[in-house]
Length: 116
Image (cartoon, rainbow, N blue to C red; front, side, top):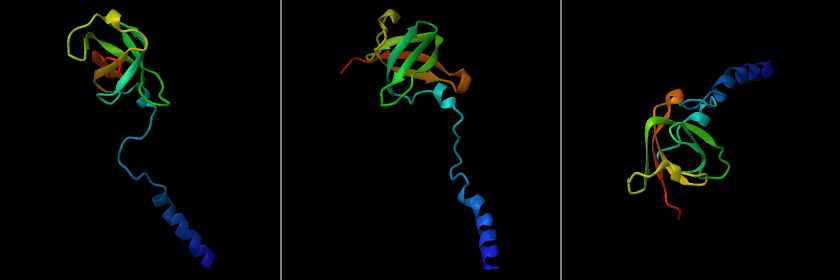
């Protein structure tokens, strides 16, 4: 009898013990196409002016991410002066100004960061 009561108590408590503690979003894999946090420095892997930019975030174990560029995307240096998009080569340090969410995510401004 004691064993049955303990078993029933465990079954009754199990859903609470395994429940999600936060109300935030769960991982659906969309993070791979989501925006890098604003202000995060990244390195260019591939760049097609007016179309897309493939970057790797500055950190250990990060995977390359491809972002769509807005048709009117601006390319500037750290001081805000316009630069020629052809100056952006693989290995260039950049900061991306990203707008939108999910599939509508676009890069409005690419800031080239001088190497340290």
